Amino acid sequence: MPSYPPTFADQVVAQPAHAQFEAFLDEHRSALNGCLDGLTEEQVRRSLVASRTTLLGLVKHATFVEKVWFDEAVTCRSRAEIGIPASSEESFILDDDDTIATVQQAHREACEASRRATSSLGLDDILHGHRRGPLPLRWVYLHVLRELAQHCGHADILREQLINE
Image (cartoon, rainbow, N blue to C red; front, top):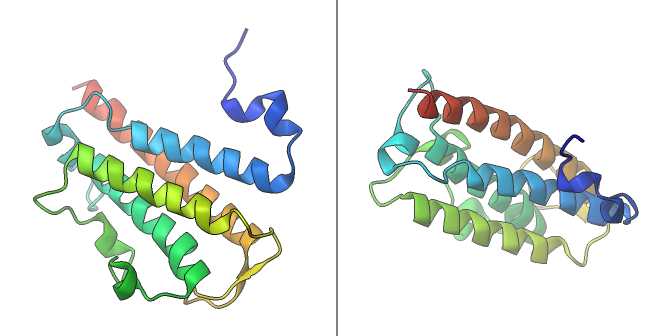
């Protein structure tokens, strides 16, 4: 019998759309955070592609994504106020004090803050804080899910390269 992801569970399928979005987001958040498990600090910092993309950088970037879409967009606070880079490209840059433990913890905290920020919102509620302009929460969920899914794919490939060295 094939192994299905948690989002295939009957209890998820029967939930309202908001809960389903959260379940799919959490599945991808967890997968991306877990891509660092069992690897060394050197491995997760290793650059295997021409861009700045590393496994540690992907999880750090995912933290930025959470804060852009579920803090900046919801609260209308600036990126400077939130303490995140001005651009997406900068969010991949690793500092000397970035470690597997600190980046994973920051990501988990950002995800929890995202859940809290959206818990009382409806899918059609409009978020006003993003640079693009007003957007419904439903669109933001879909956008973030797309981005997380892409980065999970990137992480799978990078991790496979590192493990098979």
